[in-house]
Each structure stands twice: as C-alpha cells, then as structure tokens.
Amino acid sequence: MAQETPTPRALAPRAAQHPRWIPIAVMVGLLVLAPFSGIYPVFLMKALCFALFACAFNLLLGYVGLLSFGHALFFGSAGYATAHAAKVWGWPPEVAILFGTAVAAVYGLVVGALAIRRQGIYFAMVTLALAQMAYFFYLQTPFTGGEDGIQAVPRGHLLGVLDLDAMLSLYFFVLAIFLGGFLLIHRMVHSPFGQVLKAVRENEPRAVSLGYKPDHYKLIAFVLSAALAGAAGGTKALVFQLASLTDVHWHTSGAVILMILLGGLGTILGPVVGAFIVVALENYLAQLGSWVMVVEGAIFVICVLTFRRGVIGELSRLLKRPL
Image (cartoon, rainbow, N blue to C red):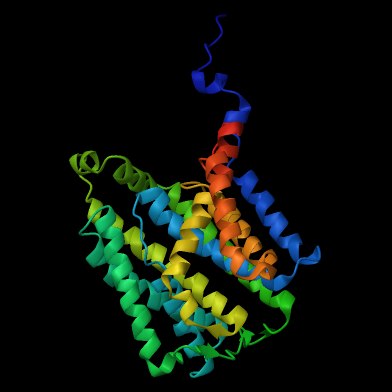
C-alpha cells in the first residue's frame, strides 16, 4: 500500500510551528515573580505603564505605519481625567481609569479624524500641533493645577475591597491592566483586522483595490491606540498619585518612540523590552544629573548601530521565529 506524500507543512520543523504563547508565558512568569526578587515595585509599575503605552503606540506605528508625534496627548489627558475623577469626584480606581481611557478614546477619535487626512510627515506634524495645543491648554486650565499638576491622588480600594495603598496589591492591579491591554493588542494583531492593517501599511493602493477602506481602518486603529495609551496614563497617575504636564509634553511622545525602536518595531514583545530598558536607564543613571540625556543618546546610537531591528527584532531573526 502506497504511503501518502507528506505535505510541505508536515515536513516543516517543529520549531517553525512553535506556539506564539510560549514567549508570552515566560514574560508573564517573570513579571509575576519580579516583586518577590527584591526589585523596587514602583520601578516595575512605572515600567509596566510605559510598556503598555509603548505597545499601544506600536499598534499604530508598527502595524499601520502611522508615526504620531502627539501620543503624549492621550497618555497625559487620561492621567488628568483619572486623577480628577479619583480626587475631586471620589470615584473608585477602576472607574476612574475607565473614565480616563474613555476620555483618551474621544480625543483619539477627534485627532484621528483630522490627522488621517494627511500622510507621512504631514500626519506627524498635525498630531504634534494638536498635542502642543492641548499642552498649553492644560497649562492654563485651573482644574489641572498648572505647573503643579493634580497631586495627592487617592488610590482608593479596588472594587471597594482591595486597598491599593499596599504596594503588592497595587503592583498586581497594574500588572492585570498591562496584561489585559497587551493581550488585546496581541489578539488584534493576529486577527483578520490586524492583517488588513498590515496590508494598508505595506501597500495602501492594493488594499483599496481589494475593496477595503484604509481610512476607516486607520481611524479605528488610531482610536484603539489612543484608548490603550490612556489606560496606561490613567494607571500611572494612580501609581504616582500625580498627574502633571510632563506626561503631556512632546518629550514623552519622543520617549515612547525610542522605546519601540530599541525593543523592536512591529514586534509583540519589543515595546515591552524597550520600555523596561529606557525606564531602567532613567532610574539607574539619575545620579548623573544633566548627563543622563547624553548617556542615553550614546546608548541609543550604539543600540541602533548594533541592533538595527531592535533587541527583540534581532533575536527574532536569529531564532527565525516571530517574537
């Protein structure tokens, strides 16, 4: 009896069919164990907030090809909204963060509707201009506290039960928010919706010829990216009990671009690794004072020359599997 000829897929090495969830499971395990390894919890929480912010921005830049210089608008606006809702209105933390996320999504809808009419550098300049307008608005508006920001934001009790003033409880709350956003992005990227986004990035005229409406997909991606950036900003406001102008400044938009480039543009784990690298550099080089920016710039140049695809991008190339 003749044997069936194996298909090329069957002949492929098992390593090529390696499940995508294994690197994610390793990351989750490390993050769960991190606070018990002696690492300062506030450092970990700050890194997780910026990791979610970077993942949200990577959804727009890495998978749609849209470079926004104004994403700090959504990050900082959600911080202000969350802080105001928690301190002035007395809302519980989970509701305050949801409110901040909703505010960021609305901003994303407005800014996206205006910005996606342009492409390339014009798109980037429109987002930067709108973000700077918001920055000066927050500087003058009384409810934001001006240069002082909104301070002493209460963390409250999660679901009325869990006291978030306890560092371990707060850490796992932040970790849950990060993982929720991360897994949502992972699902979107590997869905038909994500494939359309990649098609628009690679060849927009061809996507149009196939019957898709690129502007609709760009706007949806922009709003989702803004909302997730808002979730990160609102969470950070609760962690540090502060919402300030720093989070709305264009430097924050530049920092998140740096995180993605260091970690790996268009990869799932790259923004997370990049965020931890940048936050660690800021934390451990703080004693250098004004030289921090010089050292960070030098490290960035070395990394770009050494890891052209970013840390995770190069690792993915060496392992010959997506990460």
